[in-house]
Image (tube, rainbow, N blue to C red):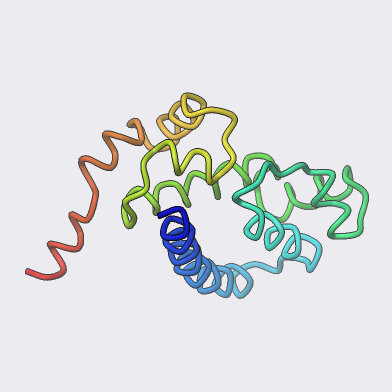
Length: 147
């Protein structure tokens, strides 16, 4: 069943990537975001399941960390750290809505330091704990779509 979980995670991840690709097209059309920032955003997305260090992003992009931080904030409108957190939480939200992974599995998959830290961050952004968010919203929209 270990393999089954891996396959399911890959499946969810692929759906999220398609969704992300569509959104990124819109973002890139809407705003003139420099290649540096686009590469940084891509790096974040490809590494959501790891702890992401800003130093690693700047090395990947090939510019100084402080330069990238300033540029990113100016163009994207938030710090890189806030962007990383937002993307992790959006992914967690999608996984709560569309998958059967437990909050613990989601928290581990997205490399949060602990389950309680994940729950705290999630509640700050979405106004409820991951558990109650899922209870209220899980697949509700599927039933509506079918009826």
